[in-house]
Length: 264
Ligand code: ATP
Ligand code: MG
Image (cartoon, rainbow, N blue to C red; front, side):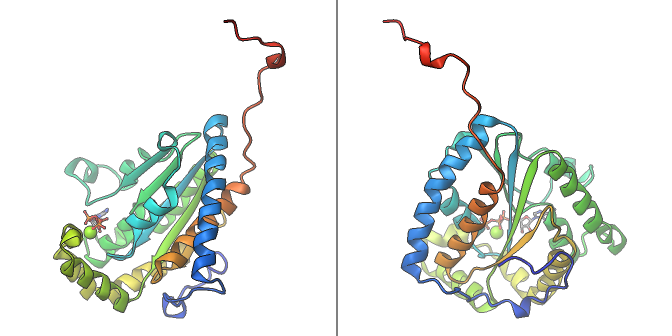
C-alpha cells in the first residue's frame, strides 16, 4: 500500500494493520516463491551490469517484523551482492558528526542491494520522541533527508522505503510470545516496554515522516504488517516491481565468443 501521493497528509489510523487485500494466504505464499525466483535473476543483472543500485529502508515499531521480513524477502539471493546495515544508538564518534555521516557510509555501491534495518529516520523518530536534540535541530532534518535521498537517486540509486505497520494489540501479542517461548527470550528487551508507552508519540512522529519524506524519488510504502504472510507478499511485490522498472540487463557479451574453443 503506497502512500497516496507525495506530500499528502498521512493519518495512520486510516491504515488497517490487519488488512490482507483480496488475496488468499496460499496464493500470496505461492506468489512470494515465484517472485523470489524473479528477484534472483534481477539481482544478477543488477550485480553483473554494475550500473545502478537499490536501497531498501525498513522502519517499524519494536516487534514490527523488520528482521524477519528482511530474512524472508532476501533469502536465496546471492549474499555477495547484498549489504545489510542495522543502525543502533549512535556511538560517540558518530555523534561527533552530522547525523547522515554514518548512514552515507553504508549506502549501496553500484551493482548492490543495500538494506537498512532502521535508518536515518531514527533521527526524526526516537530522537524526536525522546527529545535527544532540540526541536530546532530535528525540525530541519526532514529537508536534509529529502535532499540526501535526492542525491542518492541522482547518483543511480533506486530507493524504496517500507514502514511495517502493526497495531498496539499485535505488538502486545508478539511481546508476550517472546516472553513465553524460551527461544525468543533474546528478542525481548525491557526497554521496548518504555517505547510501547510512547506509542501515540511514535505514531505522530511516523505520520510526519510518511507525509514529509514521501517523494517521487524515494517513496514510502505503508505495509499492513499484522499478518506476516501478507506483509511479505506486499514487500516482495514492491521490490520486484521496482526492479522490473529499473530496466536491468546482463552486460553485453564480448565479441567473438561464438568462435572460441576451450583448449583441452
Ligand atoms: P531487535 O528487533 O533485534 O530488537 P532493534 O533494531 O530493535 O532490533 P536494538 O539493538 O534492540 O535493535 O535497538 C536499537 C536501538 O537503537 C533502537 O531502540 C533504536 O531506536 C536506537 N537507535 C537507532 N538509531 C538511533 C539514533 N540515531 N539515535 C538514537 N537511538 C537510535
Ligand atoms: Mg530492539
